[in-house]
Amino acid sequence: MKKRIRYFIIAALAVVLTAALIGRIVYVNVRMPHTSVKRVRQTDGFQTDCVTVRVHDAQLYTKEQWTGRTAKQQAGQPYTPAGNSDYQILLVNVSVDNKMEVKLSGFTVASNIFMMSKQRASSAYVYYIDNQAYNERSTGDINPGESKVFTYVFVCADWVTDDIYMDYYETDNNQRMKLEYRRVS
Amino acid sequence: MGRMLRIELRRAFYNKMFVLAVLIGSIFALLAFFGTRDYENVLSCLERPYNNSDYKVTVLEDAGTALMVWMPNKNVGNRYYYLLVTALPILAALPYGTAFINDLHSGVVYQFLTRTKRRNYFFAKLLVTFVSGGITAMLPLVVNLLVCMCYLPWGTPLYGYLRYPVKDNMVLMQLYYTHPVAYVLIYLLYTFVLYGLINCLCLACVYVEDNRIAIMLTPFILYFSTHVLLEYICGSSSYSLYGNANLIYMHKEKVFAVLLQLALLAAAAGAYLRRMKKDVVE
Image (cartoon, rainbow over all chains, first blue to last red; front, side, top):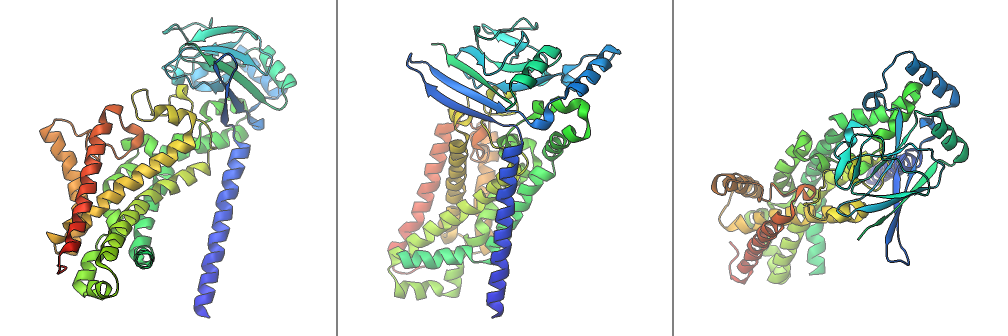
């Protein structure tokens, strides 16, 4: 009888712990932003990866908060992306060796989509690599519908301008964006 | 054979030493996450949006995946992982490494041999030693991954994010960035095979050693001394099994050396089976 009770307690503990573990993992995966890559082979022979990043609700500014932040900056606070990150990284690509043609879709952007080099990604400033040489300029913008060829791509949406913030906030309430790229042979 | 295997598997996994080995491994696995900056970083990711509305956007910069903080990703940078990888041959040998010498000392081996074929007994011993070593080594990695998954979501690693260590010249790099689940499974399989074979050294050395502690320590001594000797003889220890225990940091040019060493380990394990042809088990 004692043995049976002991087994029952161990089994109950195991079930509770497993349920808690699975529950926590599911919760984290539902709540936190994460990426998913869907690979599609197109009819023209190119391979397209659709990278989707879900943005956490709580990570979006409300208009009031944004206004407050802009006022702070105007009051003389330096714009330091590395420390305070005024831009939001939405997704990063998976490029390894090949160059890619990048096309953005799924939400409306103004001109502030930047390419960031993998070497400088941690510095959190806007860089991009164009034909193997990165440039410390924010001229790597691509507009909706445009495409460019890059070696490494690190896509960030800049939230400094109200335009993007408003566009994104108002037009894409399900908080998803899509990056399509295809490898250039 | 099946019945013999069941008996030996039960002996390997229903014993206090297995629980102890898994417990020690799990403590290392938990410390590798909670005892390092990873936990603080993840916590700051989780808490910042609610504590400081000014920096809500910042959080996405750190939006990594569970794989990012998995302990093998940090390699020697994570002291607990480093200690674990160093001690794994001993941990793997704890539950079942000395089972054969125990059987010899207690005379149980003759009880088995009168009731089953010699081949069954020896094969079962070898197989269970392999499985026991592999599983004991693999479990801490699984525990650590599960803990990481409790704090960060699963997702596809992104090459440009810099937080992932797998670079162009490393083994299975494409798979890492495209099919992380498959990569993790292969990683665990590699760990299983590596430490399973290392654990089989306990059987191979049973005919030259008679002391249980010495037998338990032999795989570790060989594992570590090869690493040190390679450093002295070849000038680089990066080809040793110890240096390549972490698949994530294995360079492509080292694959042949690692496979060769695994083949040698398999041959050493096979040498143990030669003894079953002898009339007297000693």
